[in-house]
Image 1 (tube, rainbow, N blue to C red):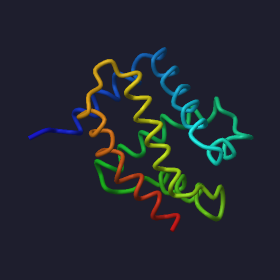
Image 2: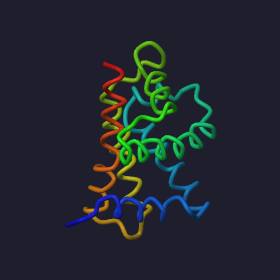
Image 3: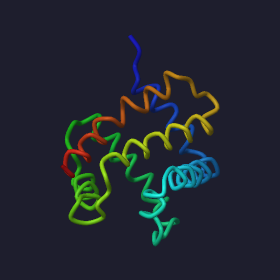
Image 4: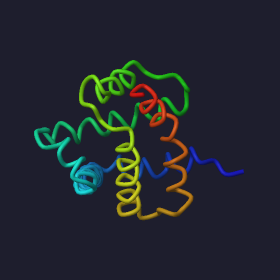
Length: 137
């Protein structure tokens, strides 16, 4: 039986423990995500990207935690509500673009990346992404 959490954790560790790789990985992810569509670019027009890049690591940690515990940390709930219709009004379909950009960046930066590792990222992050989409409905 394949343990997708183990695949994810190995990849995540490779991308986040080396400060040089982590910074380049996060920066490239946001470049790719903003280039994904005019709607995404518009959402980030006035964003402090340095601050946003720091928030990505925290957001990933929250999504991973949710996946393991199946309980939403208050910070994930707050993030979901902030991205909702009453505040930033992030369309739920943008989460799919976010994930696509993230996976493409994982594939670019994780030298050990395989289809199973990309699937592991999907498996681990899916519960938290669906939770965030649900709070926006």
